[in-house]
Image 1 (cartoon, rainbow, N blue to C red):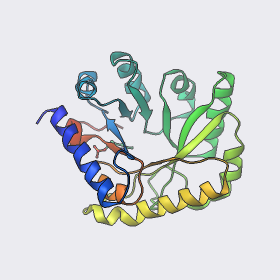
Image 2 (cartoon, rainbow, N blue to C red):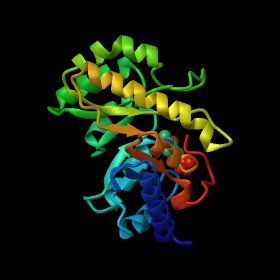
Image 3 (cartoon, rainbow, N blue to C red):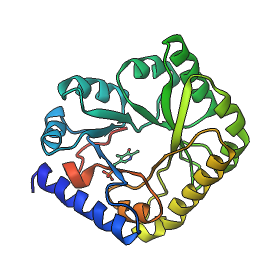
Length: 231
Ligand SMILES: *Cc1c(COP(=O)(O)O)cnc(C)c1O
């Protein structure tokens, strides 16, 4: 199967999940996660109509962004060290998805202010309370919401999560459902519309869509198994 075939199949499965969930077809965005694959692989996806790409590491994003046409959009989905924030903001990355602490959010706001911009970010939530994971605990996010939303040079566009690994995708359903509830709770507090709920990967994106995901991040189903880790 080619990358174009894989993409067609993933898009068809997204449409079926949208229908099953009673959601408008086309309401879920597909982020093609090209990490560890060469720019040519991302280009094949581009030629098959894909425009939204995700990279884990800033360095890898910086290498690929200039190799694709300028209407490709890139999201950074891996953790961003504070000393790389300036580079990330200057890189053309559209959305920084894995902002995991107030401290990082403050750094992004400060530097984007210096650059005369406003940065689009998602906040990463450690929804399963895993000790090894990055991200805000739900409780900490509630406590720090007022401080986060007061940061002047940020647009908080929504939340993202990577649930604990599961054998059966159905096991991730409660985590996805609780991230959606947290999003709704924070949306009610204002001031942001929080239109992006980034959740679901190759093995569980359909369950994530059924639980309200608006952006699924799919890598291996499109590009194949990764032969070396991205982190
Ligand atoms: C690698 C990665 C993905 C894609 O994972 P697949 O299982 O290959 O679909 C999605 N989100 C994040 C944050 C990732 O690091």
